[in-house]
Length: 426
Image (cartoon, rainbow, N blue to C red; front, side, top):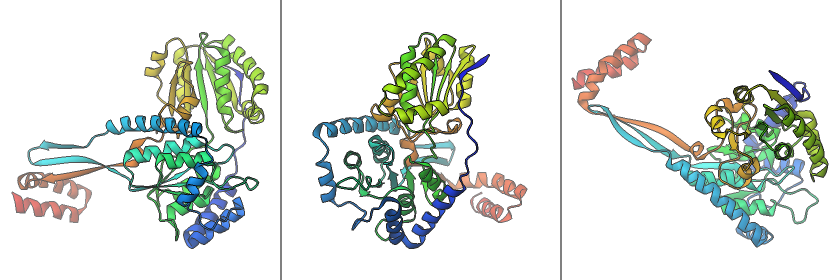
């Protein structure tokens, strides 16, 4: 049984060729001409060409002075929560040294990436929390050098530069270098390096379709966290849920943009109908109603299913970025659900809590990528590497087996390295 009380409007396949070409042109220019290309594209796209893109200590202090003491306190609280959760994640990882057979010692080391670039977007909304999610987590992982980039405020703002609260969050999170560069040119500068910005080993952070495409194209030259598209929310609810709360949470994520999916799966037709009504009632009251209206009309879905098992199975098919459960038996869903970026159990939990404050990272997989990956976490910044050390006796004992495998594969130069050790150590 599956009934759609509201279905998303099918979107024709988008032609991404123009986006790919634009991104490629910018990245090629930055790779070939460094700072000069960064400045040209910054002037063209952002009308921004300061004497230096890297902020001086005086510029940082001047911007921070424009952030109220109370706002700094709130940002510091969020930073501390993100750091505390990341430290717990770090503690769950461990190195080891084990002797699996006599004379054969094998081990695992955890080595932080040395240098990371964090992109903090500043488009429709200045995402202060994104600075914390990427920079704080990298800092807890032990990254030695963290470069942070964010675009300038719109041309009609005075003074121009990085949104002050975002800049404070970058500073408070522990960024070692802060640059006011936006979009693709920022990712190119961090990936390939310029005369004034040495390259990094990994680039992380959310952004628009151009930023996502840039991350796709620089991957390989540097590591990335993941490719994130429009944000998503899916709510599973039964007849015990409050339709006003469910609607509020769906619309809260729809606010991100007109392409953001907001989906309800429910075992109660009455609840589904009430949520549709509540969405229509609440949208006109919202300060961002134009964006929310377009997202809900185009991408909102309400689906009635026949059982909890069917609800969980359908949610796993969607593999949403954010998955809320507002049902009687929360523990059953916690044990059953498999595919999601982050899970929110009960009406007391909501996506905004994790997006902004309570600790788990908000840089999460979208577009069904939750089928195979989780979101950004402290382990993304840590290389798990292995080592081995053998005694002479163990080396001679293993050599014949290795030699035979090499012979089966036809890799005779490999076989020679094992034969040499068999002759020397046995």
